[in-house]
Length: 385
Image 1: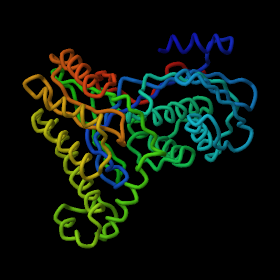
Image 2: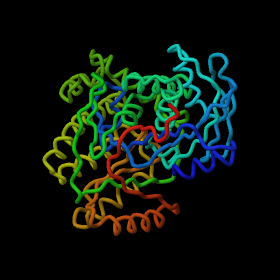
Image 3: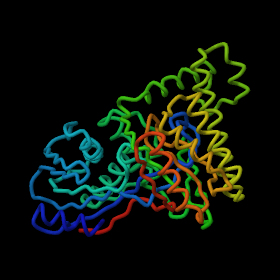
Image 4: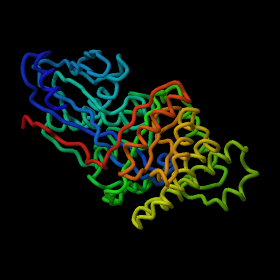
């Protein structure tokens, strides 16, 4: 990927790039829609990355060429950068604006953007682009941000320039992930505990339904508002502070749909903590059961699943532990995208073929499947410093 991007940059701009950086996508093993409720999440970085190859151009204009879309974005960096078209360029624009607000002068540059992170699949292609952009700009201005500040800057970019009120999990993971570890992230304290995932007999599989979703068009914002309404009814700062007993006692103070939304968040926090403990004990049976319970909660209480994701999970249940399937659930914001599963490594090839065959038979669509070890965070591949 590095070689391909360098060669493409040379063809487009006449010389090799000065900088090359990469940032990973992530998959959330468990803890869905808990991050913006001050809760717990357990993501890991994927061995799939967004890569940027760049060079100063001596002007105050930024040129971005996306290999994924084939589109080119051009805009001025002479003054405060603003939103614009194409839409994907706003993730980069927002990061540049964040650096400008922090007093950094951004000169013009040309960049190639390439990625192996599935777009719109719920594995944080947007955060990978934001964090890659921030890593590039750190090199360009000669200043390395504190990792948490870097993650927050990228989150601000998504809020303000993409209009998506996301939590911090995606950017945090792309910045701070450690190889062979998941991260148990406390979204209130913004601290993370590495959770070793070194057992070679267990692999993580990601199943992309190839049903794309756009968070701007989804009910993401609506769910967030419903959670805030539930917290207000329970008189707690966030649903992180609620228990299932408290939620049951307060049932009459909220509409049934609000109660269901809150029940998912409260129970999902418990599942995330239990899942981390199960991994520590290598209790894969318990881990698998928690994944299936998470999916059912997301399907029925939070209502963010879809027929394609449900089909993948149903196929996984049919394969069962005897066939090497440990557990499976939807991952990401929902309404399409990916499912994540834990499988026995020795059965990985057979399970891949089985899901591919049955999913296409049941939906008429072909999935994209890949496995990944827990990867590391953003990195500089070539520096002009």
